[in-house]
Image 1 (cartoon, one colour):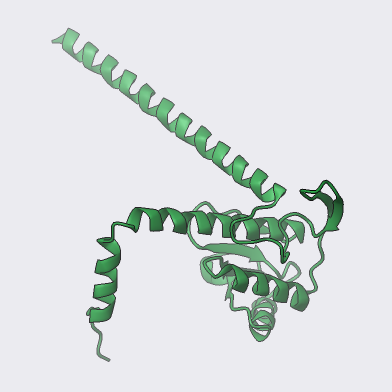
Image 2 (cartoon, helix red, strand yellow):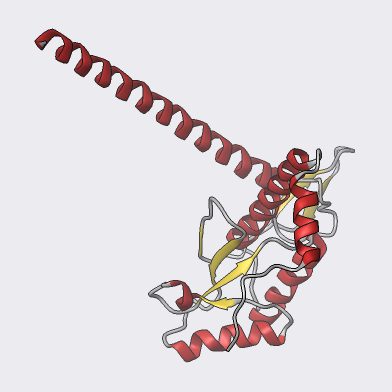
Length: 205
């Protein structure tokens, strides 16, 4: 078998053009924002349909347990097969060292329209049910019964976010801010300990 580490000329040109583009910072931020929005949408949708999942902080994948009653590898494979036959490609969770059966890994790095269709197919194939609905106030002031905030809905545009999605994103940013504050406090503490140690060392000399 022949192996090679060569990269095609087209790939090299495309990568070079991207990395040297003056729009690179904007593209990186735009990519991060869209991935964040896609994750919040999927996480809210999973919560709304009472599907267990592993909260993600990085990356483009989400681990969800679409087969909560699976006991064997065959049961897990059946969930993967059913979703594949429905047009949704996922990977079995045991490939990623999950001990319990019934888990799958799905990607969120897809077009919003594709994501909408995929979630709808999952609902149909696995017969998932929402936990409930809540009234949503429209701009005109009227109240309509809509799908649970964060579930698949045609009026969720690429740049729009539901109330619950905004709440989840706000909480995420709050947790991130707290972590950064804690990291900053830890750094200051380390600096004080280091200065104290240096002072003692100087005094002993």
